[in-house]
Image 1 (cartoon, helix red, strand yellow):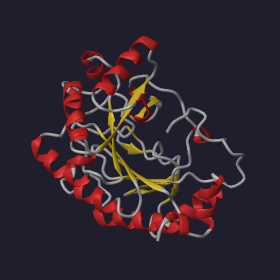
Image 2: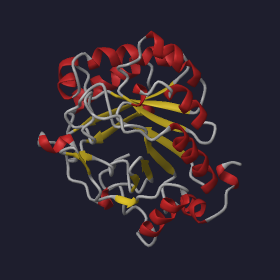
Image 3: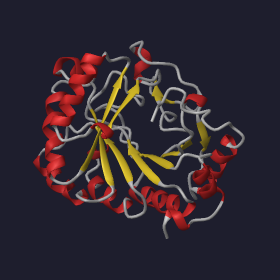
Image 4: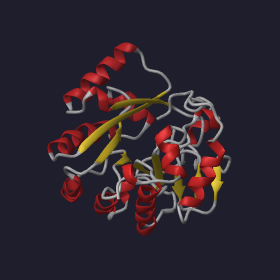
Length: 281
C-alpha cells in the first residue's frame, strides 16, 4: 500500500492541505548535552522516558495506512538508544523519515552501525547554529561544533542524507553567509538547510530566550509521545521538570486513527495558511 492509494478522511485532508502530512514521534527525552534553548529540558540526568520500538513501528505503519506522507523522529538525543539505526531503517519501509540528532555521538562504532541507513529515505537533521565554535558551543555544549563538523562529511560520504537545522534568535547576513559556506563545504546544499526561531518553551524560558508561540503559530503536525498525542512537535515540551499539556490532543495514541481524527476535527474549518505564522518547520 502506498500513500497515493489510501482513501479516507485523513488521506483526503492531507491531500487537500487541511492537515500536514508528517507525523512526529518523540523517541526519548534524555540527551548527552543540555542546550540552553532545549524545548524538553533534555540532558544527561533526564530519565530515559521512551516510546518503545514496537509503538514506533505501529505508528509508522498506521500513519501510512491513514494517508500521512512522512514521519519525523525526535528527542532528546535519539541515538542514545542503541537500536535506533535499525529502527529508523525499519520505520522507513513505511514512509520517508526525518530524524533529528545533535550528531555528537558519531564515533566509529555508531558510524559503522548507521551504515544501514545509506540509500534509504531517511534524512538526519543535524543542529548547527553558528559558523564559529565559541558562539555555537555557548548555546549547546563544549566541543559540539567540532564534533558536528567532523560527523557531517563522514555521514555524507557513507551515502546518508543530511540536513542542517539552525536554531537562533537572530543571525545577520554576514554570519549566515559564513554558515552557509560552511555547510556547503561539508557536503550539505542550501536546499537542505533550515533556519528556525527559538521558541519560548522549555529551558529557553529560564534563559529569557525565544518568541512566544500559540497554537495558530504552529503547524498541526500530529506528534506521538509516551504520554499522549500533541498538536505539534513543539507541544510536548517540559518546563520545571513538568510536561506541558496545553497542546495535548488525547492521551490515547493507539490506534493512531484516534488522535489523527481528533486533530482533524480541530483543524477543520480553519482558513488555509492559518498555521505557521512563525514559519516553524
